[in-house]
Length: 265
Image 1 (cartoon, one colour):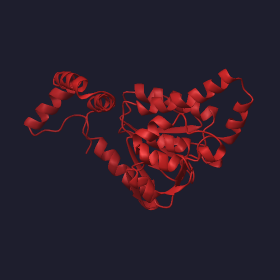
Image 2 (image 1 turned 180 degrees about the vertical axis):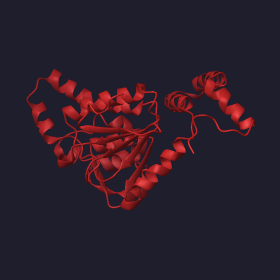
Image 3 (image 1 turned 60 degrees about the horizontal axis):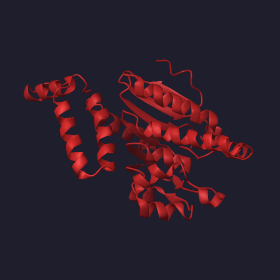
């Protein structure tokens, strides 16, 4: 699949099936405008459907990960009709939903500061690695706005208490706090970022792609359903997994002390 058609996100796919998606507006600190949101949503759909893609790494060009919404985009929306403003707002919601439900591991390479919508992008990642010295903030209330579309993912990620602590003041916080509230999975020195990302990528390349996609759906289901419904759902899913090509290959490889076809050395 041709990913060079995109400009605002730059996408590279390596021979292992690892796609690096780079937010590519470094002069604007990778802030989100209509073009970037549209292209990133389209790219997420393409990556989800591309069987050659096993893992997606999300990062930013330049010194920042993502500064949130572009103020020129905000200003242009003020002049629109209410229906048009709702549609513009909903475009961000659709992007976050598309990334959150990506049937591949989504690893956040958080190369610098992230504010507002940038924190939302971090929150839909499955594993996030940030660099020491970066700052973060849910700064919308300081602009008289709301962290609206990102809130389902941020609250799910950091919890209600931490969401109140960070959203209601809009104050900035450092990587230590970001790790403590679980926005970041881990924090490393800037010069150790690539090695840390590669370590996490390698670990994910040991997992069967189909099982990974099913497990992401499993997590979403059990997180939103009660135990009785989950018991029925999970019994069905494991029974199904025993019949898949991956399940059969994985069991046979273990019993015969072999290596399944999806595992990368």
